[in-house]
Structure formats: C-alpha cells, structure tokens
Image (tube, rainbow, N blue to C red; front, top):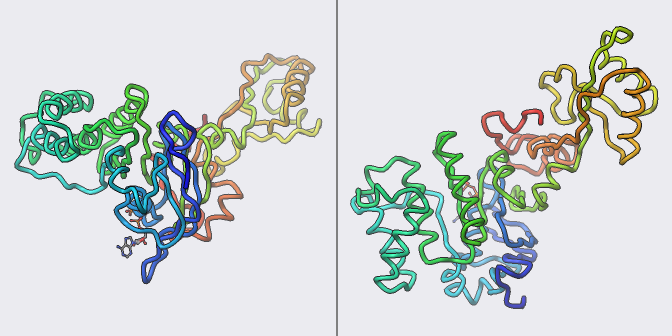
Length: 351
Ligand SMILES: Nc1ncnc2c1ncn2[C@@H]1O[C@H](COP(=O)(O)OP(=O)(O)OP(=O)(O)O)[C@@H](O)[C@H]1O
C-alpha cells in the first residue's frame, strides 16, 4: 500500500502492472506509471485505453490485475474517498438540456456533499472561472459545444478537488474554442493548485498545456516524460549566417565547412522530412559545448556574420516520427507509424 499522498508530495497517481481485459479486447496491458502534481497529458489514439484508465482510477471499474493508487488511496477499496477528492469531466455530452448551468452545477455540488449555501457560492465562483457567469441562468440546451464543455469543467471543479480528470475536453471545439479551453485547464492548476490529468489524441495541444506527457497505445505505456524532455530529446542547433562577397551563399559554405569538420549538418530539421527546407537555416546535431565552439570558429574562419545560433526544440509530433517511435508503432491498432493526430498541422512547424 502506498503512503498517503497529497498534491504537495511527489506522486498523485501510481499504477503498477495495471491491466483491464474485456473478453475480446485488452484495454490496458500491464501499465505502470507515476504521475506527479501539475498538468499531465494522457495521449493516445482512439481506443488506446485512456477512458478505461480514468474509470479504474475513479474506482468505477475494477482492474483485471495490478494496482493503482490515487492521492495515496487504493482504487479497489477507497473509490468513494477518491471521488470526494477528484473531479471528473466525462468525454461525452451528458448534460440535461432543460436546466440552467447554475441549477446543474449546484446540484452536482450538493451531490458532492457541499451544504446549500456553499454549493451556491462555489457554483457562482466556478462558473465565473470558466467564463459562463453571464449565461448561467440560461438552459444548457441552448448552449454552444464550447459552453457545454465549460459546464462539464465547472461541475468537475465545484467541490474543490485536489485533482481533476478531464476526458477529451477539447473534443468538438474549433481552434479558438480549443485555445480557450486549454488556457482554462492551465489556470485550473496555476490559479487553484489543482492537479490535472487531461486526455487528448492531439499531441500539439498537450505540448502547449502540460508539464508532463504520458503516451499509451493499445493499453501499453509508450512513454512517460516531462514535456521539456519530449521536446528536447533530439535537439539540434539552428544556425543562420550572412552571405559575403567571398561566399555569396554563406549557408552552403558553412554547411560544407562543418561537414568537412565532421559535424552532422543538414538543411532540414530532423523529423521534418517531407516539409520544405527552411531557407537559410542550417541544422547542426549538437554534441555538447564543442559543437557551439566549432560553429562559432567555422563561421569566423569563413568571415561570415552569425545571425543566430540557437538550440532547436523538437516538437512532440516529431518525436513520434523518429526511429524509436517507428519501432513502437507496429503495436498500434491504428495506422502504423502515425498513431496520433497532430493539430492543424501546427505540430510540424519548424521551431
Ligand atoms: N465495456 C467495454 N467492453 C468491451 N470493450 C471495451 C469496453 N470499454 C472499452 N472497451 C474497449 O477497450 C479499448 C479501450 O477503450 P477506451 O475507451 O479506454 O479507449 P480511449 O483511449 O478512451 O478511446 P476513446 O477516446 O475512443 O474513448 C477499446 O478497444 C474499446 O473498444
């Protein structure tokens, strides 16, 4: 049994060899993961097992084998205590059309055990936080998809949980609506200190929102690491130089000189194959401080002007087009090598 854990401690969710088998499908397959406080993204294609994991963590569905603890509480024996401390925003539309946001959220607050006055106060605060204060007395049936998503978020927050599970909160939203929802999710943590586990099949949006990303596929763990690690694992230096009379194509001159000196240098960022090369930018694989010195000295030796030399951060989607992801991909149920959607192509932008 894990020790009692709070959001101030190191881990909010721990699973060990957690499996869920249905007669025809293994939804989770020996999943072991530790999730710390903050905003964590749980990413995977449709059917990867995200909703199943959330249901087990809420104590709503039994695991077939393995253990899971949420805030130090055992999901098999402490489900009610977990649900007191954890908010849940389900994936699908589940809102009654004929009641107002206020009536619905007050009801959910009362269901969570808040007394009437506190329930009304918390409801007003929470609806203000999600940007629905003006509309709070209108029946939910007349709301847009974005407003409905915000009602679902409000009901997950109203009882002041330590942790919230948000299942595909950006589903059905247009890009502007997604941005607003992602901003709200970020503020749930920054303004209230509530930890967040948010699922998505869009890597790009998790990259912008989460401190940590857990990737599952076919019920197994592909990867769990901080967003920084995701975006830095395969860094290269982006170098831009001026042309000179002696070197009318300074970029090419530098590329040739660096290649002759043994540096791995290309005009395309790794992982962006298939995209247009970025004009005057060279990408040099960084092998520590020595690479910076080599670039600086080579630029100086050629008499070129150094416009910029910066560490290029790879974006998450590119990580999955790298070789290790290609190896993991055959296990996917979806298209091999491309199990994840990117958002509006934006995740492939060159940094
Ligand atoms: N009650 C059930 N009975 C049988 N199979 C199920 C059940 N619930 C889920 N599954 C299967 O388990 C797998 C994982 O489903 P899950 O809903 O957890 O995936 P997901 O990652 O949340 O995807 P989505 O975003 O599409 O809901 C899927 O193959 C699904 O068909």
